[in-house]
Image 1 (tube, rainbow, N blue to C red):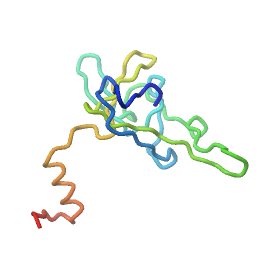
Image 2 (cartoon, rainbow, N blue to C red):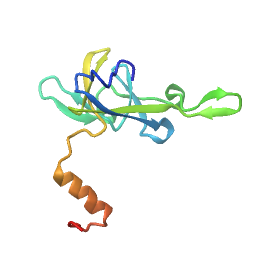
Image 3 (cartoon, rainbow, N blue to C red):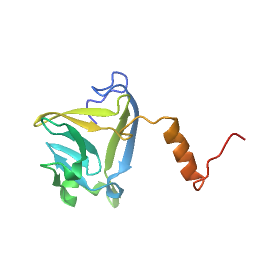
Image 4 (cartoon, rainbow, N blue to C red):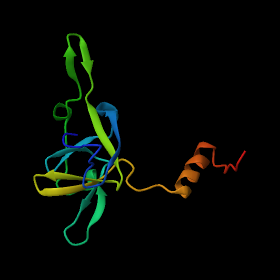
Length: 135
């Protein structure tokens, strides 16, 4: 998360939120173009026909083993802490990262903007498939 500034944002827009997840409970970690990233993150690939794919499916992605991930580290004697995976939500839902192959574009946590239909769908799911009107 070095270099991400919530005030000035990124090439993907202003950072609206930052999150931390327990790496041991997140999706498997991969190395892609020198960046450690979860396999379920979306990345923009292709020279001519650009499209997003999951990192796990991206050409050149390499699964990291537990030692490379740093699944556990000693914080103080007798106590262990699990490292964190950091993620952001940006205004444009894109994260532009300078990698060992130039700039790589990843989707942020939300991936796409949500509208009224998506929010209504989420409520329907929370309510067991029932659409609920005003009370």
